[in-house]
Image (cartoon, rainbow, N blue to C red; front, side, top):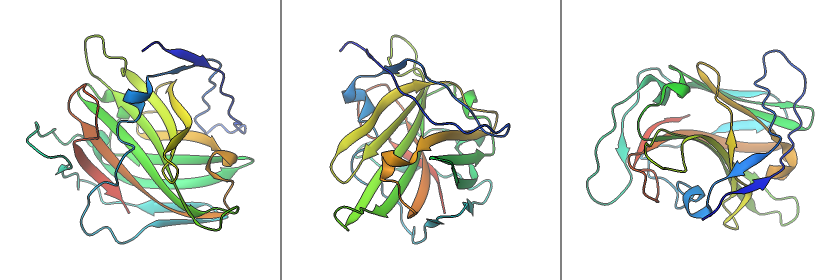
Amino acid sequence: MPKYNLCVIFYVPKASSVLAIAIAVATLIPVSIGLSGLGPEIKIGGRQTVGIYNNADSSIEDAQGDVTPVYQQVGIEEVPEARDYHDILRASVQKRGEAFFFTVVLAGNPNDNDKYETQYRWHIITTSPITNREQQYIIRFQNSAFGGNSTMQGWYFAIFDRTVGRFIVPPTSILNMTDNTVEFPIEDFYIGNPSSFSYWIDVSVRVNATFGQPDYIMDYAP
């Protein structure tokens, strides 16, 4: 399937501590690839808490060294080695102007991924002001290190409306992250401009370049 070009403009307030990524022309990957990891809810036992954003800066903490591959599929796959960039230490949500800044701090450099595909996913649960019903979004940052002619090399960003099953922002090529964080600004209207929402984060791995869901959940928070 051919690639397409899309002009995407993000509002990025000026701040020296902010990862400011300007995307003049974004490269989209085929939808069949982009859907990877955005299907059925992942299976993690014991997850009973969530982070809460309520019109003020919000953060959550996670223990270091607790990466454990949890298999999500049917069958047998190679078990990925736990790496420091799979290990969530903390995460935060800040509202700056018209943009939310979603930040995950890791125990290692996410750009060091040299094998498989690693996904950093924010699961957002809010209430639609139009329908007054629960609304779910997935904000995904995907880094792939598959060799050959894979179209999934490098970093991609996407926003998926889980409630209606469609992309709000299709998978879009972005620049590398900083040394120990995955951070990106999201304009508020992409997720319904909420004043409050609950959230949780996971780091997942897909071990081959075929289409499909992530094979393993490596870490999650809270």
